[in-house]
Amino acid sequence: MASKSNAPLLVLGTGNRKKGLELIELLEPIGLGVQTLADFPNAIEVDETGDSFAANAQLKATEQARHLNCWVLGEDSGLVVDALKGAPGIYSARYSGPGATDESNNLHLLDELGKTPLERRTAHYVCHITISDPSGNVRAESEATCQGRIRFEPAGTGGFGYDPLFEIVEYHRTFGELGLAVKGILSHRARAVAAILPALMKLVDSGEMASSARR
Image (cartoon, rainbow, N blue to C red; front, side, top):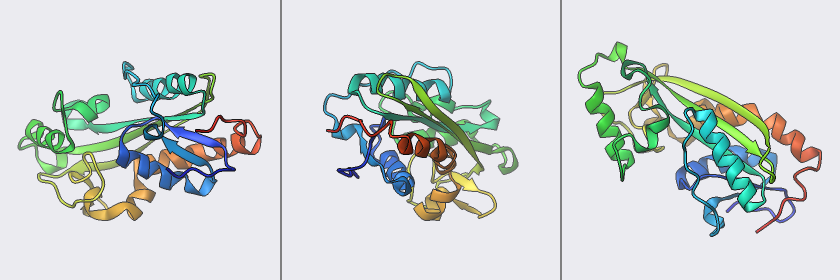
């Protein structure tokens, strides 16, 4: 997936196909050979035991990097809803319990918010990114947010996760309605990638990533 034969390799430490595709598109300008864990049958399942987005992103990056002997981008993101005291937070992907899906998580979120009025349904997405070298050393990090609010019912079929419920107030549209082009500029993930690109480009230009093991 998005592998370039003469480019340094960066492995995206995620098994989420939609998230992987989104990250690949955001990283396209830097000219890396980007692969996901789907390209590595021997990839490990990293336990997300951290107590923050930053801690989980670091675990995903450093543990996978040591195991694969590759440069790895670890990313952890989620939704923070003010009326729910920060929930679902780091538990966003499994908010509705074992076997959670995007649909079940969205339904659970709506149930938890109930009749909370629109003005109190403020929320923000968070994304933390960590880059680890093959030895498991953190070499760069970034974190970004995107402000919005939670609709009373889903709208749009674009994106994934809570996107059909997450409204960008200025646009009066959810991420599910706005589409990938707009999300690729406004989202927490797009902003976190933009913030880490200068550090990543320095690592590429320095030649440190040139010896990355390829698969």
